[in-house]
Length: 145
Image (cartoon, rainbow, N blue to C red; front, side, top):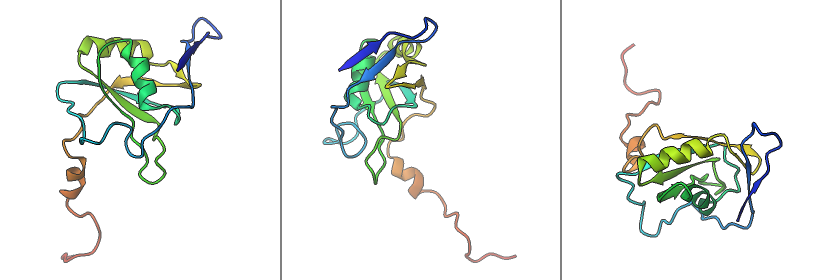
């Protein structure tokens, strides 16, 4: 359900228009029935400035033309369940990820120019551990002054 529109000027990349009929899940936009997917060994691209209506399936369709997509994740707000405006797409082959980055960076999707880059940090095995194991940074307590 994508439609590539003609660029207004030849120096602009084509615009991809996504239909608004896509279904969205309630949490992060991937199949959570079996827990988080195994992403070991995958090359992760981060897509920034996404339109809130773009679904995981839309992203998979757009990026699959560059190679074998192993996973797509669209983080969602825990309260509103709305997309947070960015996503991750993971490829099984580095060259395919590089091709997708080169071709999709600065493309317009639903009128918004997206930025695609290699993800800077790998996904934590258990993201909650990052917060649970931090020392309290609150005020008060027994301190000598």
